[in-house]
Length: 403
Figure 1 (cartoon, rainbow, N blue to C red):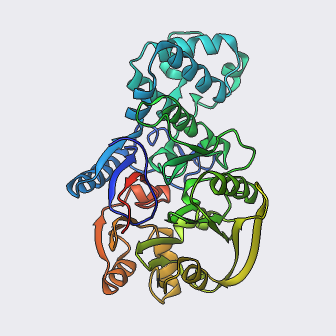
Figure 2: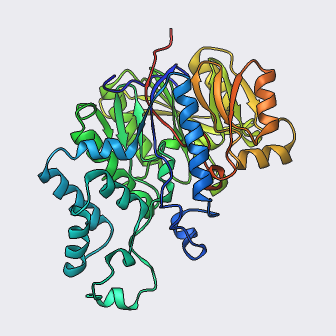
Figure 3: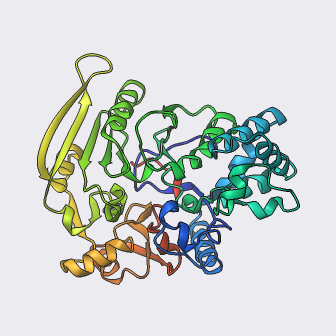
C-alpha cells in the first residue's frame, strides 16, 4: 500500500505509524521533566513491553504497522539529503559553536542511517563524545548533560503531523522542545518514495502552532479542530483556507477549549467510537463556544459562525445524524476526571464500533461495552505516564473508506 487515505476516524485501519519508546525515556530526569513536558518518568523496559503488545495487537487485527525511525531512514535517499538532514537537526538543536557542530556532525555521520535517527530521537549526552576536551565556554559552564535534547514525546506520533484525506499537515508545535520532532515528518513527506507526492496543507515553518491531537477527521467533508492550549486560532484559519481550496472539505468545527494541560488536545476529551457515537469528558457535555467555519464568498475568505451549543447538537447538525455522547467515567465527576486524566476518552478506532482502550479505565470501558462498542484493552501502567492514550500513540496512514 502506498500513499495516504484518512477520511474518517473509524474506517477500518489498514496502515498505522508508531514509534516504540526508546532511550529518550531513560534520558528523563526529575530536574528536566517540566522542560520536556513530562510529569513522571516511565520505566522504559515496561513501557516497551506495553508498546510491543500494542503493536502485536494491531498486527493481529490485520493492520500494517510502520515505525517512524524506519520511514525517516528510508527517506535519507542519498548523501546530499543526509548532510542536509544532519545540518538541519544540529541547527535546530541550537548548537552554534563551530567546534561543537563539527564534533557532533562527525559523530552522527559515523552511524548507519537508522542508528543515527534513533540517536537524534533519544538525545545525545555530552558523554557520548568522551575523550574530546570541551571546546566551548557553554560546555564548560552548563550543567545540562545533553548536546541535544531528548524527544520523549515522540511515542505520541499523532501530534507532529496529521493525515487529512490523501494529504498531510506538518505542524508547528506549541512548545519549542517538540519542534524538532517535525523535522522527521518534513523529510518523510519530501523524500520517501511512498509519501513524497502527498499534498501538504500546513508547514512546520508557519508562525502559528497546530498539533495533531486537536484534529479529528469526521468524514470526507468535515473535520473538527480543538482551539486548545497547543493549537492557535490563526493556524486553524490557515489550514481551513487550504483545505477548502484543495480538498473536498467543506466544514470545520472549531471547539474552544480550556487552555490547560489536563485538556491539552481535543482528543484527550473527545474521540469517535462508532458511526454516531463519541466518548467525551463530562465537562464537554454542556454548551461550549463552537465556531462553524466554511468557505467565504471569495477565494481565501472564510465564513465563521459562532454557536454556543452542545457538541452533540452541533455534530448532529453538521453530520446529519443523531449523535450519542458517552461520558468518560460515567456520571461520576470524580471517576470522569480520574479516567480522563488516564486517557479514558482517548480511544483508537480500528473499525466502526471497535476501539483500543487502556484497560485501567474500567468505568469508561464498561460504559462503551454497554453501548454496543467492542473494546480491545491494552496495559498502560507506564505508557500512560506520558499523558496520552491509544489515539495519541498512533498515526493512521490508511483507513478504508466508509460506505
